Length: 185
Image (cartoon, rainbow, N blue to C red; front, side):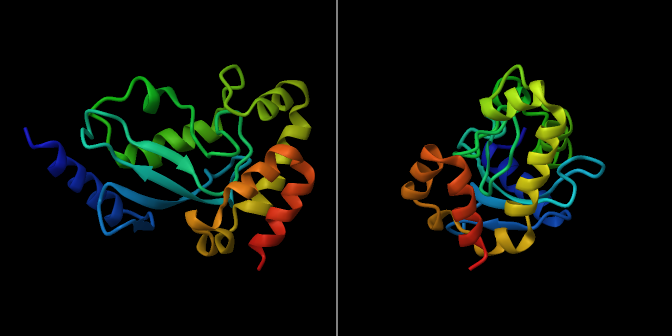
């Protein structure tokens, strides 16, 4: 069997040769961003997200770390950090999976079938269970504000500061407007 580093390199190259735009970080293959489009016929259709992927040294025996860099309203995605709560990545990862599985199956399934009973975003989970119509509207609003191609091409990890994050914690409505305004610059 090949070594983990050869498998990592092969999986990253396979992802790069697919339809996904992959942007390496620090010229290595263990950290990169991937442009991810919301699944068709979902609330997230038309949305474009930049997904940060970090591969541990023991990949594929250890799962990749996956996080959304631009905001998404979803019960299983932490709004501030972008961390994803997905069993197949966090607990039941297998070396049989590869990076294409993450982007072609796991993330689309996460967006199509949110699990409000195991939330990272309690507000999204609560709204989804109490008022599905308002939840759907908020998902679409977030897609419109934060998941447009121009938002991700101008955004880098360095642009988000701790100050922006603390603003989000204090006042969600006013900081949403502030962040959306900044993205338009």
